[in-house]
Length: 176
View 1 (cartoon, rainbow, N blue to C red):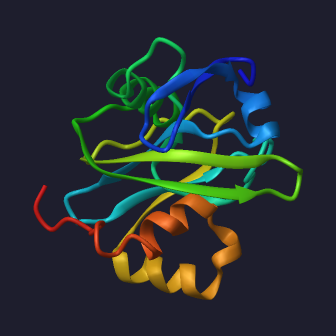
View 2 (cartoon, rainbow, N blue to C red):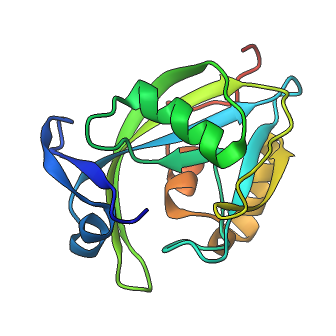
């Protein structure tokens, strides 16, 4: 799966070309990505622990689903494809914002993404792909922020960026 081609972009989200996912992360090239946050009727966020054999950020807790659109695939197609593949369900999703970030991982890989953030609502029980997801749980806003403050090393870099550093743009919805 690391050989799939993902979309290289500039800071304005204009497509520049395509390259294998592994090579993009080895070179730290800016690419398009997405993060999905699904909330239930209790306004809790579905988070998951990444599988322990993921190529980076293995075993860390993160948002409901995250990935990259593939060559020839729109964000709209990719978000629904990946939510079904990873979490075993689909729901209506709404774009809320995008942000750019870059971070280096201990294994030498570099994440440099223009991340498009989507939110949705579902009370479905996930049927996760064990190659992608080790565990999942629903969590409220207060508990999540407390955990992130106390144990930041347990969460993915991009998820912390979404929750902690995008406070003026992101919120736990009270009415979806």
